[in-house]
Length: 479
Image (spheres, rainbow, N blue to C red):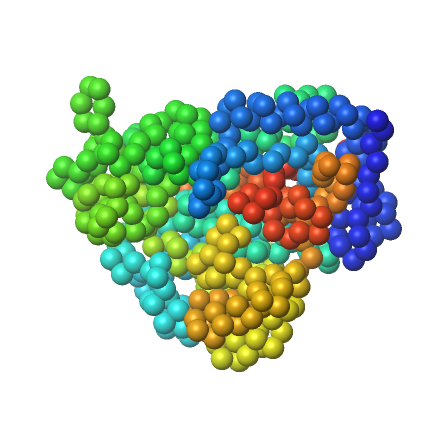
């Protein structure tokens, strides 16, 4: 059956078609492939991809589901294409943003210059639940706090990329970026002979280089610390450890002796110098955080403060990805770097401010409301899609805990052709590039593209029914 491509709705930026429904130069090869593709063949390829992902164990768990079963993240066969010039600008903006955020994190644990200058209120920093007073004046190698950052971007109908949020604690999803590329190369190798697609498979090598650079030792021992196989991102933890050729450990595999961290091995204890931790701050050490935690290592915090081990990312980085701090990132770039932001922020109302709260309450049906500590698409309201009951519920929440929420306009996420039950149709998507900070700031071209599979939906999170795509950054602006 010959493939039919649905045209995008008016007023939405589409990544295949321009406003006159002409194919964008960077997507000519993609359109040609879609037109020549057989719908039944693509459906068979999709089934093949599902079987392969299941065999590889590329699944995730949705917390709170009764069955507790792992689920596949739906994989879409049609790649998302980004031109070389768009990526060049995006990369410069990401590098600028992450550098400023690392400077901010150093500052709020040392000199407090940005607070003294009145750029940001002291209460918003020191009263933040992610702020770690014990990190004050602690010297970290290269003054780095966020070694691995995932920055969520959307493309608005004006064609510009906007930062939706910053993820600086334990950003996840990079394994899906890598496996999506592998799957596309396996299913459609001929496409990569036609298109100058920039590679991403060297990400584990860059990550390993970044983690080794986190220590000042010449040949540091690096491990990945996971909460265990019941964690929703366990596949990624195991995948990255395997790809980097380092040990995947749980808290019980480590112990502290003389304020140093050791790993149990079959040939005796081995000192650990860098821990790529995939556990939240409060669960890392039951002696310093949650006393009921069985996930961490007793005494780890003391070893960390003694400088005998490096945590990537550092403790206390969560302050910088709090959604109430997000509105200040452009000011951070100006304050620390003396530059204008390359990437735009989404306009944001901070409900902790009485005037902002009143505006949000008056315009609730038009806005998106998010918890400042929320993640995964949970705890948010999309005003235009909400029922009267949901709007009323959120009014009550906002009035009771205004400091717990921010609000933003409902932006028009760009669309991209997606293979769904009704054929090839436009669906909304976002992008999470992964930025690595070590001796230098670097990233692979692309990131994790998440796509909303329901028509008109703006929620791309896998936990909310979204899927993923391979992301193609072209090494030339046309193909």
